[in-house]
Image (cartoon, rainbow, N blue to C red; front, side, top):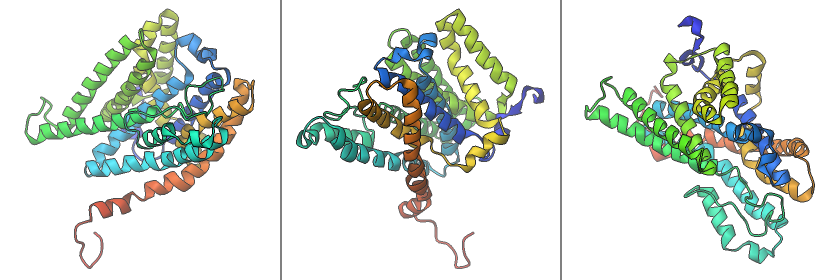
Length: 377
């Protein structure tokens, strides 16, 4: 209904949105959240953890996955074929990641390691390099002698764990899309009668199973629950794209969603968890597409969020090593500036140029049909 706000389908039409701003805010939120645990070694020092049992970084990762699910579903549905989709996703993730890992292993590691160079460049360095570059089977977290005297010793770059999960989401989504297309091809259609409806049903079914698993794990295994929640939010984003013509976004809807979460937290953490995926997904979509004016000016700057996300953690670990007793607020201020100085060239020199090579790569992999001498149609 018109009075219920603007249709998400209408709002998401075109590239004039706040998605770049949303992602940089989320990446900064992850940086802020990590500053507490990396400065003190104790994740419970973050105020939000004590209030809702989740960190600001965890909520920010959920926002990333909602936006990713929305955009990736749009990409796969608009791609000419799966190969086009796969190449686009690989170009967005791997070039910048490769540069980060090479810098980490061959520059940062040898400088900060407390062991000899010979010991450092052993088996563990090879495992870290291969797993973090390929993202196969998860990522490696440690390099020999690197940051082992820091307050937080568990990881060289604790942000990378989300990337294998994101890749898994891409693979599963592509499989669901393929199944939906197959249902249409063999006329085993659902009662709505099309591959789009079958895709929605498959995505919704998968999302519901993930949602139930997350609710169960959130009471017993917080670490595993966070991974499942991230994937659940990806499914939420995917469903929101598929249902975009039936979803309406408004400021009072966003306020209601946030208010419901606050009230639920006061009542019970269990109620809070039940509402979280739905309320957070709505708020993320609202922020991504509704606010205008000065918010849209950020699009003139660039998309530095991926670089911020990749480089923040190791930079914060270096700060914790060099500045003993650093306070979380000090780490936030210094690491934000240092990370931004890495994120800007990562976007301008690596990520943006990599994305631009898609047409050339696709042309080599799959030459275009013969074109007439008159020119391109």
